Image 1 (tube, rainbow, N blue to C red):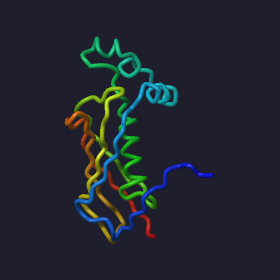
Image 2: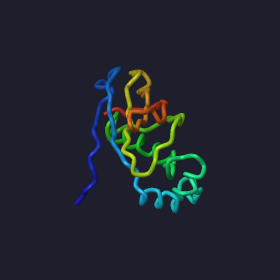
Image 3: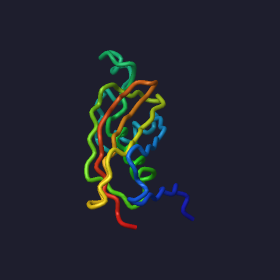
Length: 144
């Protein structure tokens, strides 16, 4: 029995400028530990809240790659969803996200090319009403 969530399937013709999707997420201390072990990145800014506070942060800073992972969820599961793959993703990080802080990854369709099957998404990651990261993704949508 497959208990994994099912990806939405949007065909290229269903994707229009302004179409939007949001993934709400919170990164836990357990997620941070799992990522540190998986990546080998044990930088104390990410793993030691007291150390991070001593450097001027409000606590342990969430790995940027975990925010990118939520962008992956957004693209692969919602917009455009199944039958799509990144060609590129770029995020500029402006403010830190902290462990256990609720956040949202948002994607908005900026451009759709019927000839190439390429969709350009404007990306924004927010928490507490503030923009933490901005960027864009180029996504190839397979023919269905």
